Length: 356
Image (tube, rainbow, N blue to C red; front, side, top):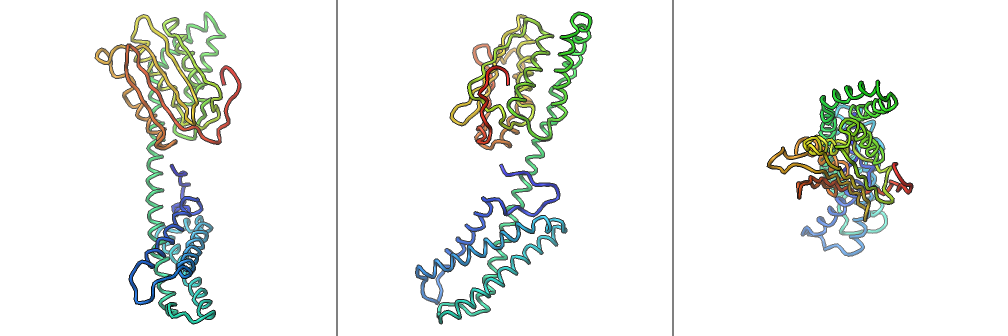
């Protein structure tokens, strides 16, 4: 996905390489279409095609650079005024550049294929303004759509605060009150873990986390649940080698999956069970799998089929694109959920051992 649009900057960013290449591609496509249109003039030869291509690419590059440089200033204007000013700049560039090019070609040699001054300048200016307007409108719509998707993802992340349910808070506080008399040091550690958990929940809608932070938060959550459930809750972590611990991740990706495992799995079984958490990085993909014993779907609500998993899948898709995936289901007495996301190239691998 594209970078988020800064507040107040409505003019599309033509400094980004994919968009600059799009502008150049539109210019080249225009040259090809003009060459293919039947006209009274003789067909273009190779030299004329190269000259026209160079001229069109130069115009597109000049307009793109100018709009890139003036993006912030133009965005300070009302949208209609700023859009008109942007097209006015494109028109000015096209008129000046086409007049200079026509004068140079006319002075070098008499070419019967060269259009008249007015036709050449007017046609170039009209084409530049039309293509610039189409490109800006297209990129504007894309930016608005991406901003809307991002806002929805942040709203869903904020809604995950409800995943740390009131009953979990009340049970945790009662447990801590009991521990204060029996084991003050354990109670203090539980209070710190609980505060970190709620701090992460309150900040779920803003910024990003890392894989290391997500795993650390999940471990803190599970340590609280282990104090509450005792031997009914067993854990098995499997952390592969060279995991990208500093890799950016959306907030609250792993903890809600583990909360589902506790709430819909372990707490519903009198004997409890073991939650398995597996983290692996292989062939440019990070896989995080959570599995736990669970009642059959016919005897219990579909675990994790609610808002948490839908929100996580949506936010992963927004952050990592179509390569991100989530699979979940019940099989042979266990419920499993696996997420896969591409590893960011800039995320250095953690080569240490144990907890990040």
